[in-house]
Length: 369
Image (cartoon, rainbow, N blue to C red; front, top):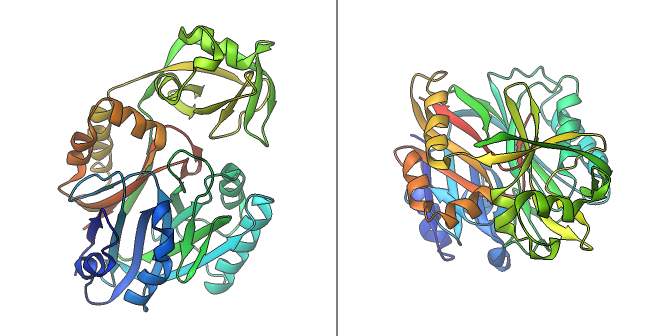
């Protein structure tokens, strides 16, 4: 038994599930294009693996051992050789009150696990939530929760950059306003981390007016935020800003040697900048420059090998703006090849989760032998 992965560009669910089937499947993780919602992936996977915990998220393109794909469905199965126990839950209402949704799902998971003590080197949590909610509030609630000490990693569900509907699922349940979590008690070693390939420049500025709840920055240095940002990056006016500009020119909070990227996704009313993660007023941010995204991917694998004697598989959660960059550089196949010797899957997200809510980063969990 081992970690198995597969993908299909169309809805060949029978072929895909047969490819990842193995004795004693304990957990199934899958990602799918929103347009496949009509096939009810959550029900299809649970029918195929009734004894396994199944968790999924909608994506904008994904990654797999056998190739990268812009559309389709991707899945991984883990057996009883890798996972001893699983606990899974889904809670709705994240758009209106993400904190309450997080509190409810934490309480449900604690109850299902018998209020046991958790150890981060043994318990791994996968976290997926609606990419259109304030996901940072969910992650913060998990991080602050007493007695819930585990490695929690994942991504915000995505659609095709329409920002209209994203989906998460747990077993037979699916929601376009939800958070899904699967906790696994692992039998094998694993390693989680977050990687940012952007570096600070000498250009910095202060956010002077913001609405953190809506993730909108209205003023930078007392000026129209969109116009200020456009001028800094050499664009003549805010109305000409595009996703490519945002991908090439993110901003970030710099703490020592660590960069926490804060990525823009839209111009609001020709004056505000909306972000994938909230920024508070009086925060100093730096304009960032992009590094080599392929070299950076290789480095993430090298770093993981410092903690694991060998790596048999991985789950990757890659920011949609990194995906835009990879496509712009025509390097999707090259990025995928970095990990193709592993049994790996992953998807492009509207935010990456590990300890906090990240942007323009790669978060990953690597599975040892």
